[in-house]
Image 1 (cartoon, chains in turn cyan, yellow):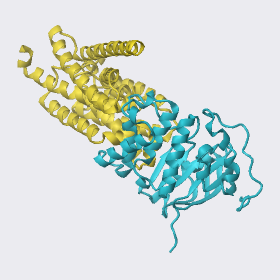
Image 2 (image 1 turned 135 degrees about the vertical axis):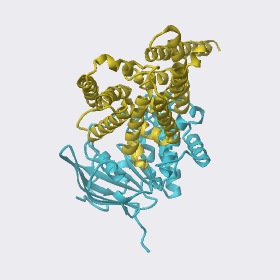
Image 3 (image 1 turned 90 degrees about the horizontal axis):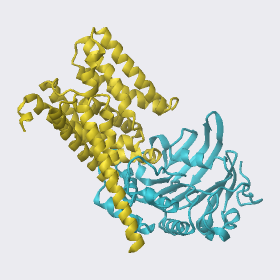
Image 4 (image 1 turned 90 degrees about the vertical axis):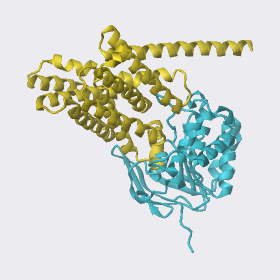
Length: 260
Length: 276
């Protein structure tokens, strides 16, 4: 019996404004795998994950849990966290309301959150250390706290695949540790994780595989320990917010070599 | 109250209750989407609908509903195509709607003064049939915003996230705009097309001075809208003014009071933090 990949993408191409951003990317993620997507600014990392969750049109094939993306309707199985989730809106919303809205992937068309959804939301808010702030408007929180609320929103429907676009960008060391703890739990439970990152920080030991993009192509694919572990030292620094100016060096050799 | 012994005042009161509840009910989502001026744009478009009714002899309420809903769908299409910014699309609706309205009214052989009752509200002109339409549409608007509040909230809060969660973002975005268009025609006789947007926005602004959650803002805005519409209507009868401006001035007064109370509460919290 073969195991169905969580993500099976091949030859993914995306043009944005007439410019090719992805030029034929293959990506396969198996259940329980933690894959990180690395690369310089403009290499197509965000575009890739946005295409994977169906936010931007693509050419090539993408299958989620064995179903072509355009026919995929089991939204509960996917938790997504955008690079900079929208926080500001014209009307206040509490942390609980924002986290609870993630449970709508169970009933996207109609229906109010159930008691079980409320319990799941309260549990996740507790796990990301925001219980004390649960009834505060989300705009009153710090950047790291908001990111923690957003990861809670992505997880509240108990997804089998979590896709995150630079969740660590600009967050404080404590939030980074909360993140690493939470992702460790997910990893143990067999949830597949795809995370775009500039730096792995405290996540490095959890990552199974790194995919390095360059100019819209997979430049390297293999164990993460090469490029990722060197960040471990300054994981406890204060908020490394801005993006590094230099491209991360690509390891000369890896088990899968320099794939095109 | 003696005013309520007149049937036209009874009709007007029912219409004011419905308007006061439905305008902020949909207005909360409009404000959350940062489209506070959408109501204004659609109000101008509805004016063309009214004029179309005057020109063809069809009830202006019916033509206004149809034209405003068409305008709402058009603006959502323009927004989703992305070629025109929401801002620019709204501006064009403003101008097209008001120019078309006055032009068609002139062609109908009426002066622009006829439009006055639609622009600022008029309580003595409502028929029983008008009232029935207002009640049915108003109840539909309020019920829909409450039934779909979680989904609408998600769409207005974070569109990308909502799309990944499988929420029909385009459908519900359009539905919110359509509900706004319907609300505008519901409010046409009470507040008038030029000021209806104020009743969608000001109660929301007032209630969020004192609320922290989306749910409480939604409900408090409906309470503020109800209070402003009913008290404004009765007051306008007493002092012989048009109901629309009276209702909006009261809503603005509620906003000012709420903002002052918020200021006092904040100052007190800060003082307690210093001394306590």
